[in-house]
Structure formats: C-alpha cells, structure tokens
Length: 387
Image (cartoon, rainbow, N blue to C red; front, side, top):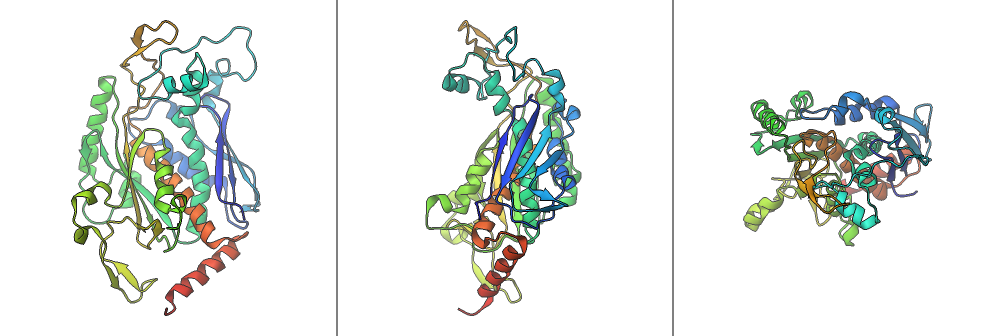
C-alpha cells in the first residue's frame, strides 16, 4: 500500500482549506463528528484572537469514506472559512478591475520579508495568507484521521502546557488529563494557570505577545516503529521535522532532551529490567530517552516537548522597512492571538499522530484494517516467544 501522507491547500482568508489524506486502510470507522472534536480543541485557549469566535471549524468529508467506513481511496476533507465573506475582494481568485492595495510593511519574526524576496513579489499578502497558522486547521483534520487509526491499536496521544510567558507548571506524578482538557490553557497545574493568564493579560495590555513550552505524550506505542538503518527512517528525525513545521515552534526535544547534556551516562540511560506480565516481558526504570532509542520506538511513552516563540504579529508593532519606499515604518498589524501555546499543543498532537500512523503502516502494512490488525497481533506474539 502507499505511504500514509497528506496534502493541504488554502489561504487564511480564502474560501476554504482543503486536505487530501492518502494511504489509510479500508474498513476504519470515521465520521465528521470525530474530526470536529479535535478542530474545536484547536480553537480553544486563553489569549486567542477574535477570529476564533467567527470560525466554527468542521471538516466535511468529500471522499474516501462510505457509510461511516474508509474505503482505501484518498480521503478528501473541506473546511470552509466563514471569514471569507469579509475578504471576497481582497482574496478574489479572479482578476479585479482595480488592483488591491499591496501590503509593504513586513513583520519581524514572520515569513513576510523572506517570502516576498524569494518569490519576487512586491506585496506580502500572498505570503501572509499561506504562512498563517490558519493552515494548521487542515493539519488537525488530517491528524484526527490518523488518531482514529491509532486508537484501533490502543495508542493514545495527549498534550499539555508546561510554560507560558516564563511561568512554569509545577508537575509531580502523572498528568491529570481531565484537568488539562477543562483548562483554558491546557495546563495541569491550576495555580500556575492563574499566573500564566496574568502573563497573557499583561502582554496584551502592552500590545505584546507571549510564547511558552508544550509537551506531547504518546502512550502504548509498540516497540519497533522507525529504523536505525538510514537517517530519514529514524522515528525521532521524523517527529522533530513534523513538530518543527508548526508555525512559531523554534525548538524540539525528545525525552529529557537538553537536560541529558548535563548528566552522566549512568544517569541518562534507562535501565532495562524484567517485568513479568508486561507486553514484552521487560520495562525501563526511567524514560529519559522519551520512548525512542536508535531511531526506533522502545515501548515506553513517546515524550516530545516544543518551545513556542511569541506570536510575531503585535498590536504595538516593531519597526520595519517599507518595501516600496525603504523608509523605516511600523510593521503591518492584522488581527492576531496574544498566545497560541495551548492550540499549538493540539496541532502537535496531530503532527505526532500523522508520523506514528505512517510508521505503524510502514511496519504492519495492510490494505484493510483487519489485515493490519492481524499483522500487528502476529508481531506482538513473535516478540513474546523465546529467542
């Protein structure tokens, strides 16, 4: 079967976002309501812009599903942009009698200047529209399709906020995911959440923005996804690329990541011990590796953290140059979030789900769900047999 992959199209203020998901086996239960849950989670979060009150994202399934089950062909999804009504002229796909006024004040920290330079443009609007984080709604829809398959194999993916604006959550013991899902900032520490909100409010009052750190956790991932034999097949490499592709993400670590640089080997590496009754007969004493060793999943939870920079569109704009006059001016401002860390966590879940689905199907194959499940169960049985 083909590799699991997806392709998105659409602009921030265009008619719609479209997604094509390819490589999903036939026979997987899937409906629009399931996808809508993750799209709604992406839109939440304290510090979001007014646009989240305009859009009510829902993905229409156009193809690849019949009577509630995937049929093995490409899955087509469509997410309408309700704000299109206010942008019909600016974002018209047909020629206009009067040319739209160009935007010539690139924002520091955004793709504006590099984009217009690369593509030989004198207007940052085409760059702004596609580089906007609005595109991530399409990724979350594709990620929901991937998540639906992973659930069939007991794999779960969650995210939570670790820090915003320099305020860190104090976490001890297992994460209470019910608390996270009810939190406006997807934070498990209620006291830290209050301080994070205060940091967001303070930034907003000064026309500024804040970033932070998020963590994504994948549980019950089987041993053996990914490979050590080539650089591009390493699971950690694929995950790092996927998470770094999220707008505003500037750093990624797996497991203890950068902390391991200060450890000795005897502290950093996870002791292997016998555990009767476990899936594989063994377990790690710790999980500094974050569930991946040598580019291969090792059976422990996969833990990924991402550093999210402050949103570059500021209500109190930074200095820039006007592309048409080369004079120093204030950067362009367009409706913007103050903080997107909680939403970035949901997007991160989607990207991790996509990577793990591709790795799982690479390992177990199958043109239909029954075949994939049979291959998976046979693999688990072979692991448990004496070597």
